[in-house]
Image (cartoon, rainbow, N blue to C red; front, side, top):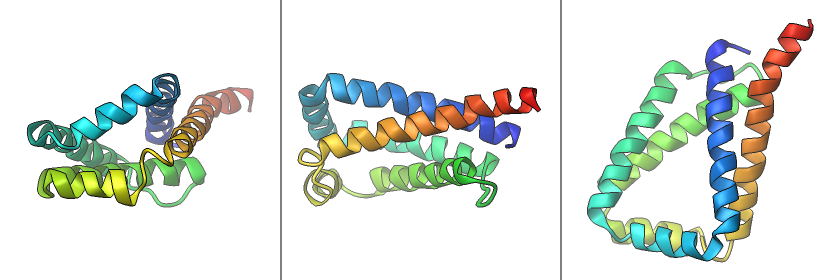
Length: 138
């Protein structure tokens, strides 16, 4: 595993773990906050700009589609973050809120989204931090 993959696996893994725990602990507050956020154009624009920046940073440093599941997941997260940022900047808030809240059934599938975030975070953290342990043992 490359140094970049190891770092990004750790970063994204810990980020996902923290967000998943917050999602599980504050379910109703998160649902309300996301709903309100998606209707606030200036905040959505700012969030979109930050996602474009983060997505571009990951893609430019780590656009690798082979080398194991963690490597591909890091690259996929980079591209999805970039795409999400572009959507937030370009598309009107009503369309974005419709996509997230209605079509993706955010509130109904909330436990699934929290679980996927938790599992993804655990896997990437394990892959990122475990890579050093495996290398030192060899």
